[in-house]
Length: 192
Image 1 (tube, rainbow, N blue to C red):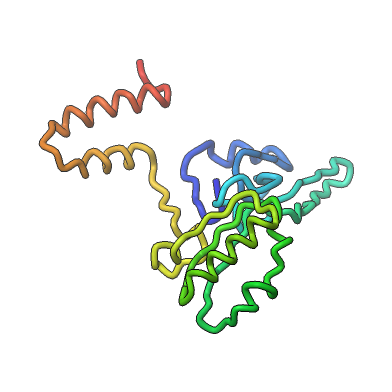
Image 2: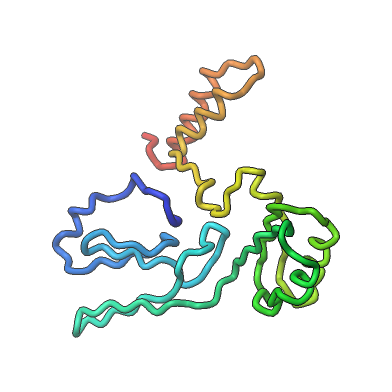
């Protein structure tokens, strides 16, 4: 899972009580639950990994020492753009564009009084070999800076039924729900 996400599925943690240490992968965020260590991913893969420490876990079985080696390279960077109290030279000379080289940069336009300045900022990023630039308007005017606030965790079946219930066409929702339920059971391997 990602930072600030909660998993409610999986094996009971008690089955691991007999082990001094259990190391698990797949989850993107490092976390610990007693003797269970979710080691996280070594680097950022998606925007959900933004601002989440990444790196490598080293375990020494002779000393039982667990060491985290932080990966200081981030793939994703954000620039919160607000020109309300800035002068033009801030855009042209006070931004260290080289720190964004080979990175995916999201420019969040919070306050824009001069669109030309935003264009110059983007041009300067591109000139400095940014891998990709994404421009968004203040996260849809929600005044949100952290992408994790957008995560709405819902189990698959609840999501499917919610989508079906929100269909406005005149269809037989009961039959459709039944068909999707059979497909859902097949997908998770619960079909006799």
